Image (cartoon, rainbow, N blue to C red; front, side):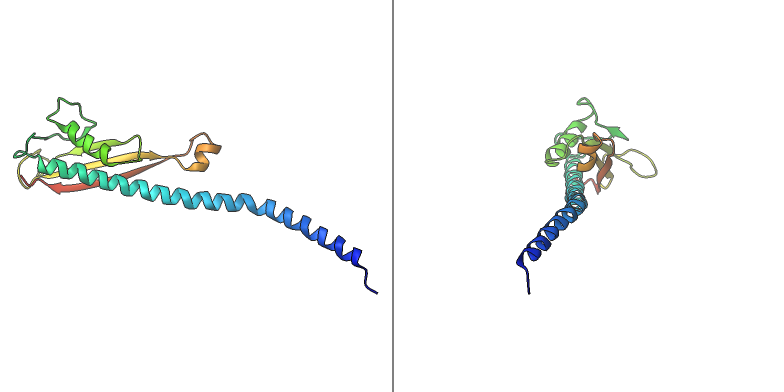
Length: 160
């Protein structure tokens, strides 16, 4: 004969086993999901920095010696002051186009030919934008102890 109460007991044991397996798998699954989100967020921020650096470089090449206002030259300027031949407008162009990225450091360079600084037609302008990136597990579990530096850069030649 077949007893139905034995099957009920077997079903309860299976439910408890599923609960224990779920408790073991859940942290690994959540770490995997947050890793996917963090990777996507890092790629998005790096692409945003590259776009913003290109916009800053575009502003610099349009406003070379023939532009109004004239910007540059400056070699190895990091976050230049407003008095430095309107280089702050390049920094503004970068930070205004980097929507959603915070803590940006902008480096502007007019490398010229053979290390000389130039600000006339066909001279290169290099704009680099860097920003810190803190992954979510580091931010919430380690207090932001682990971070990466994301970079976007652009090099174009003065057109005017």
